Image 1 (cartoon, rainbow, N blue to C red):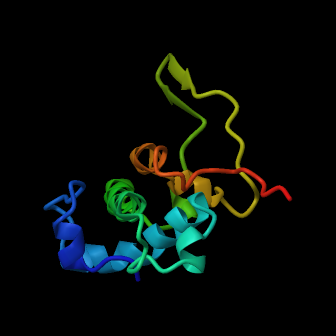
Image 2: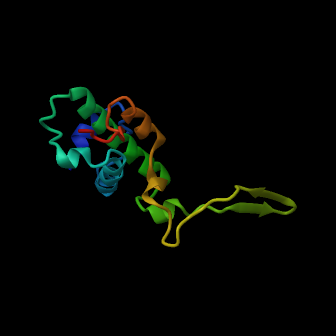
Length: 134
């Protein structure tokens, strides 16, 4: 686990509406989502001993923002997050949200991505998709 509730409460992204119980509910999925975004960087490297504190702090902040995002969505399930209607009609008024694609088993994990978390990670180097050359 990357964060404890006490760690979370000290972050800039701390949201007082996220109780310890909600934190416990969302920390696992938030970690999975941020791991996917960062291509498991901290699965392969130790967060606690990372000498690049800027990168490590941005990663922790992204986890906190992802927890907030899951709390706002009210779910930690990519399937539930993708369950938005493609159109709504009320009387003679109709709103069509366009061509939304969704796979058969529900939305991909990317349906849970927090834009704020991605923004925080942008300058950290953790979103780099480069290929090592020889």
